[in-house]
Amino acid sequence: MGLVLLALVLLFVASSSRVWCKKGPKKKVKIFRLDKPSVCTNVVESDSVVGFYFSGHFENGTVAIADTSVVGRPDELDMSKERDGLLKALQKGMKGACNGERRRVVVPPYLYRTGEAVAEDQFPSETIELRVHVVLIDGEAYAEEASSAHVASDHGPASECGACRLFVSKFVESWYNTLAKNLAEVKNNDGKEPPSLTYNEDLEDMIQNLCTSDVFLKDTKVDTKAILPFCEKTMTVHKRTIAEQAMRHLNDMTKSWLPFSNQVCGLMTQSCPLRGEEKVSTCDTCKALIEEIEFDLATQGPSLKVLPIEKRAWGILTDMCGKTKYSHSNPHKASEVCEDLLEDHGKALVSLIAVKEAGEGFTLDNGMTELFCKSAGMCNDQKSYDKDEL
Figure 1 (cartoon, rainbow, N blue to C red):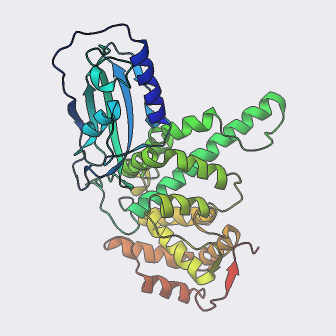
Figure 2 (spheres, rainbow, N blue to C red; figure 1 turned 90 degrees about the vertical axis):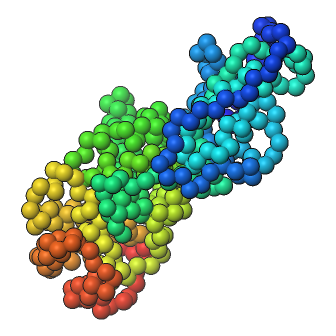
Figure 3 (cartoon, helix red, strand yellow; figure 1 turned 45 degrees about the horizontal axis):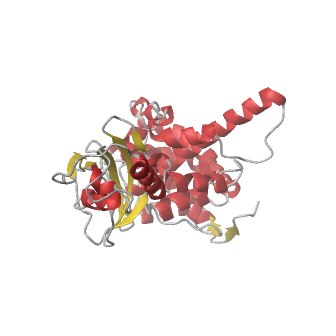
C-alpha cells in the first residue's frame, strides 16, 4: 500500500509542478546512516528482498509520504529487479544496510520524475528526503542485542522464548484493559453492550503505543523493561498481524490464550516451540507449571526482588493457578491440577525454590522436574484429557 501511495504522490508532483530548473549537472543520491545496530550479521545485498518502512519530506518540510510504520505492515522491495525513479533511489539508499538500520536518503528532483510528463532537461525543483528503516531481509526480522544487565537463560527475560512469553502476557493484559474500558463507556452511555467485538480507535492506540505504555514502563513487579527491545522489534515487524490474531483469539476472556501465544511466539517470531492444543496429560501440565514458576521468578521486578525468597515464591504460587489460560489449552483442567499441586505440595515447592535460589538460581532440568511431579503423584497416570473436557 505504501509503494502505491508513493507512486501516486510522485505522479502528482511531476504533473502539477510549475517550478523548473535549468539543465545542469545532475546530483547523486546522498545516503546518511542514522542508527546502525551494534551487531550486523545480515545486510541488504543486490539480490535481497527487503521489508522496510519509510517516510518522505520535501525541503520546505511538507510531508510527501506519511510514515508507513503506522500501518504496521512493511513495504517490500526486490533489490534484484531494475527500478526507476524513487524506487531506484530507495534501492541505492538501502543497499548495504544492516537489518534494523535507519537511514536518511536525500533524492535530487530528477530522480523521482515519472514517465514523459517531464522533459529530459526539466524537472521539479524540490529535493525529497526519505527516512528509511530496514526491518526484514529475505523474510528474517532484525535482532536486538540482549541487555548486558540481564543474563540469558532458557526461561529468563533475555531469552527469546522468555521474552516472547512475557510480551504476550503484557499484550493480553493491555488488550483486555482496553476492551473493559470500552465496555464500561458503552454501558454508561446507553446501557447497551456492543453486539460483537470491533476494532476501534482505542485498540489502535494501544497497538501503536504498547511498548511505551505504563503496562511496560511502570510495572515494578514484573521486569518488563528487560524485554523492551523485543517488544519494539516484534511490534515493528508484526504489529498489524498481531492485532488481527488478537481479534481472532482474544474475543472471549474465558477461552485459552494458548492459540494466540502459539501464533505470536511459535509462528511469527519463532521464539518458542509450539505447545500442543489437543491432548495434555496431568504429568505434562505439572511439568509445565514448574517451568512457569522458574520463568516467573526470572522476570520478577525490583519491588519483589528485595523480598525474601520464600515470600517471592509464595506470591508466584498463589498467582499461578489463575494464569493457566495463558499457556494451557485446557485452562480449567490445568487450574485443577495446579490447585491440587499447591494444596498438597506447595510447602515442598517453596523449599525447593529456596534451596535452588540460594545456589545459582531456580533451574530444574527435565529429569528433576519429572521427579518432583512423580513424587507429587502426578506423573504416574499418563491418561490424557481432551482440551474441551471439563
